[in-house]
Amino acid sequence: MTVAMPLIVLVTALACLLRLFKGTQETLDTSSEVRIARLALISIVLAILGEFLLTSDSMDSTTLSRMLNNLAVFAGLPMLVSAVLSRAAARPFTMPIWGRWFLAIIALFELFRRMDAGLAYTQGLVIAMVAGVLVAMIIAKDASLKKSLALSFVCTAASAISWYQGLNELATHLPAALALWFATGSLRQKSR
Image 1 (cartoon, rainbow, N blue to C red):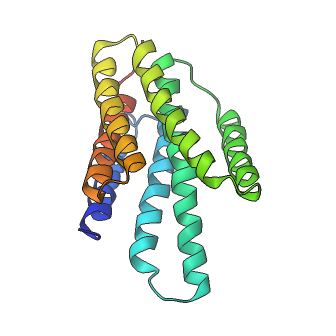
Image 2 (cartoon, rainbow, N blue to C red):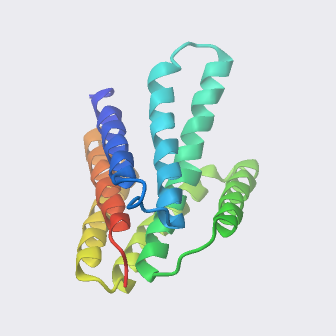
């Protein structure tokens, strides 16, 4: 079970990446939200691959694996939720603004890490991400976008609750994989 659940999330993240790259050069969505979502998904894929491939007991492998995991959890996932929220609100941002937001997220992570408040930050971040998907669902105008976001919200909330309760990996990773799928589905749809 330990290998199967991250593998499910890896396959789902790769499928989501392919889903966001689907299309020809002319029809490929190059909006900033989709580009940010692609980068977030790449960080998730790299973190899981690092978990599988960096298995030696050397300090360098452990540090790199932890860095990839932190990048995915504390930067990639918030950026993905931000992209979904931006698409639902029909408020696209420029890439420099996304870059500043990324730096702010990283700085906030580093601040809490140095204050030894990492667990509190993680819990707050999970609540903020669930709330972000809920707000995106509420403000979305398009019915199909709202449906996709509602499914993503339910899966994100289920994954967060199971993580808080310390349930098994199946209860945490499977809803997370489904949340990724529905969230990227919402990015494939144009908001009105």
